Length: 364
Image 1 (cartoon, rainbow, N blue to C red):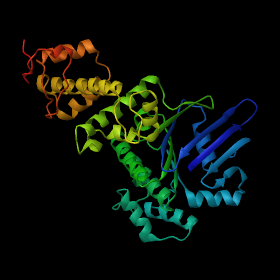
Image 2: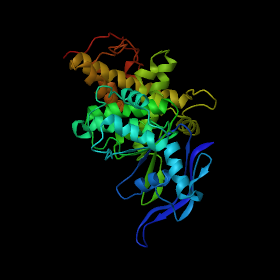
Image 3: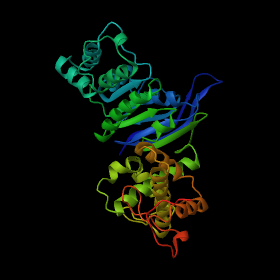
Image 4: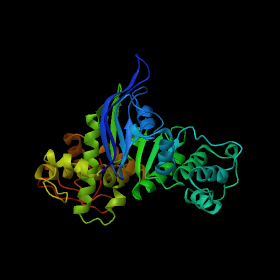
């Protein structure tokens, strides 16, 4: 059963502004969904409706077994207190309460304050040594982690996050997204509003809003194809017997949701069946992708002497843009190497016909 269901929901703020226009969508229990789109497209309004902070003029909002559009104000307060965790970009911490007290305040509103439990929640988000610090003494990333601890203290089944990394630097963004990934792994449903394409790709699914309507599940066709490529790479590693495929291709593993796998079957990239398996079309596409990636790794590592971390980053980029002619040129320049620097086989191409694989980089 869906954790969240919106049925032809419309929210108008006046005769001139329609924030959401007959929006219908379903979000499965335990799913991580990123809500994306330009400013003014209705993203925050959608989040407020799911949190019971706002109500539609038309349609229904159902979360679990509750129809939010039929709940009284006291029942909506109870719903937010017991079932929802809210994480905002602005933090909304009480400035004269320290980190521990801010989390305990959320406990008090839910049931009873428990200092030990609040301390453990902060330790789980890496703030065990910052319990007694006021918000003014915390960095932006630390404030956001206090917000996450506060949101999780009532063990909610639904997490609603509005641009939770919007004001964070890259290092703190990674830390906060790691916490959201841990929530997702525990089976909590996450609905996250974000403008950041990188953040959006961490989710199981992306919902694009435009002018108050659902415009699609991916921002562009190119992004959709790139997501399929990531899944194909992950599946190829599994076929090769890579026991660390989930770590080696973590993004592909996350994107391999039942929804995307079904679309790949419908397009003939995978064959029908419970377990994902390549069709001939899918195998050729995956083989070409892996060949481009591993040739790029070899070029950057052995010819350009790049640092290993940069090699992987650049190879991931080039695997999506190299043309067949350029791929063959690189392969010929490298003298048709049999394996990449990590020892994984490089699939042969048409340029390799009758050519011995030397494993040496080309010199001219």
